[in-house]
Amino acid sequence: MACWIFTTPTVSEAPFAWNALMERFRIDRGVSVVEVSPHVYEQVRFDAYTNELGAVNLGPNPNADDPDFYPAPRTGLHYFRGGYEWRVDDQVRSDIIASGAADASNFVLCPDQSFGYGEGGYGDGEYGG
Image (cartoon, rainbow, N blue to C red; front, side, top):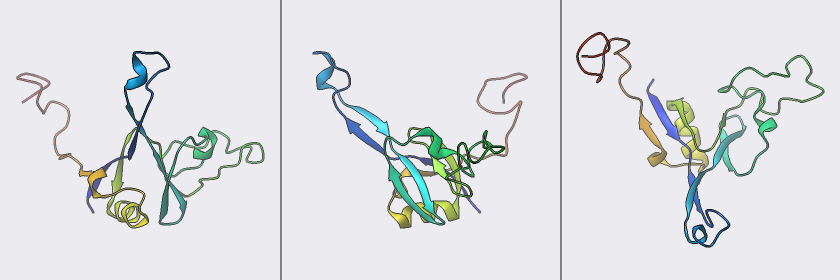
């Protein structure tokens, strides 16, 4: 199974800041991609960070001991926070594309993982080739 690097979609927004100089500039902002039900994804903007709780690809739920206080709405589902790169497999890639949340241009094959510490493009010596 191949490994893919998924870069979330972006949207270009303006103004960049609220002053006369920056009102003309645009900035790309990441859009989150959320699994709403198994194998179905959609784009989400301005989502609350508590909606990420329980996601499979994020860290452990800090409120696992008290689900009544902050329930984990994403238990067993993926949450790809906008503006970041994520490692995904073939199945997740095809589900995201089929749902229309992103297209093939958002995915790049992972680099070769065969080299480790002491190898790579860091010159000669202990840390490189």
